Image (cartoon, rainbow, N blue to C red; front, side, top):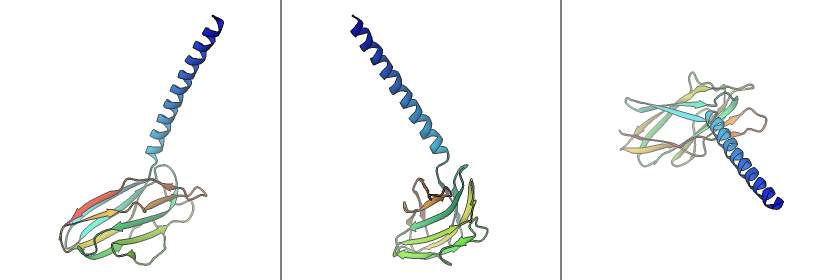
Length: 163
């Protein structure tokens, strides 16, 4: 009889511990979601379609950003990048770098302590030959100023542009 009570007690304790772990993971994920890297793209139609790029590091400090723009090179006529009023002070490339046909990249940073919260990086202006999809590529990243350059995750952003 005593052995049965111990088994029931151990079983209840394991269920309680498992429940506490589930709650702890849930709370951790919610907190992590609040500080995740974010991208906001504002589209403004003119001769070219202008997309303003914003990053959001939440309350954490970041000091480097890489934005890779994926597009179909047969459907895009011209891409410019405007870095005026950017949070970045240091630029890896003076102009966007064409990594390969269909992928253009900008990379920049700000010295320590860097920046936090929602910040403006710059704006791509794109002239399309025809209706096409352009996307912030998954290789894009915001790097934290944590001594390790931890990359903040973000959702992939896609948008359609027309001539």
